[in-house]
Image 1 (tube, rainbow, N blue to C red):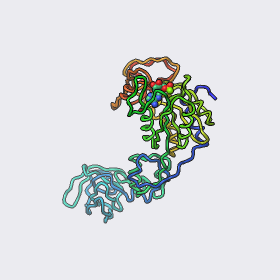
Image 2 (image 1 turned 135 degrees about the horizontal axis):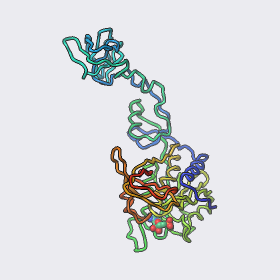
Image 3 (image 1 turned 60 degrees about the vertical axis):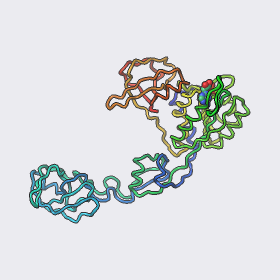
Image 4 (image 1 turned 90 degrees about the vertical axis):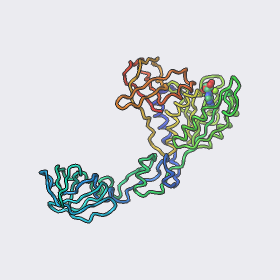
Length: 404
Ligand code: AMP
Ligand code: MG
């Protein structure tokens, strides 16, 4: 049942491979565009016409023939003005110009726009002090997206740039994938609901809340189940209930302790377990399995371990269920503010603060008391990633960072 411990990228590759055969693309539903942010596109979208739909001026200035301004200054006769929101009525011939505003359609015959900054009016003429090449400041019809071309492919998450594009092509109702449901099952005799006053030896069920927030943020629908005590039968019953959702996330009960029953309970129910340990900290005892075609993730109970293993592993399954084929981890690099050492056995994901300074991203580890220290991670905006292959880094050296 147990398998060898894997590095985190081996574990991710294994999970992706296991999901490949089984996870089905969820059914689409059609929603109005104003409700589509954060959803995953379930249709290909094509340009309904050329974009831009006409040769569009990118500047205020004068639409001219580039040959006429090849040897500036050039004196040209102004035929009139074209503004945004009206068709161009002019045809520009040799020695002629049309005054044009940003966003307006370029007149026939003109192949460039000279910016108004380089112009001077003299009666019915304009003196242009600079020449520009053909094509400058005039975006040809269809140059951005020709009619019928694919502008968005299914599987993309709709954020504000994609919403703008959909609006531009007139897609006011859009097919998106149904949000996958994720059951969240916290285990542990010490865990109590957050509206209860815990005894001195009890702790509140914070994991259900962080996991629900992580699930919702990734486009899933969280279903929090009652807390499972450390008893096999009740744990099994609640797992059965959890398997009614598209994805089951458990917290706690996956370590080697006498009362860590999750692996046993999953095995009893026929869940095929393929991962039981990953060489990371926090989060080493991580369980992944399939109940038929349903992914099940057993996350360690220490709150920061739960958060990290969700981001590294469970998210892969949730993204796949949401119709997103790719689930990259957005690692970046930043320079350490101070020397940093660790015991290079496990790859560590440590709460840290990334400065957003332009040209000089810096990262500072946050002092913490280990993977239960919620006050520390609440100060963080990233995880600093300390590779198992290295023991020390000096202040100023670059180190990978995973933004929260
Ligand atoms: P476990 O992985 O079950 O050994 O849990 C490790 C530790 O994580 C426990 O001793 C608790 O302190 C903490 N823990 C477990 N479950 C939760 C939970 N649902 N919410 C917050 N902390 C938890
Ligand atoms: Mg426990």
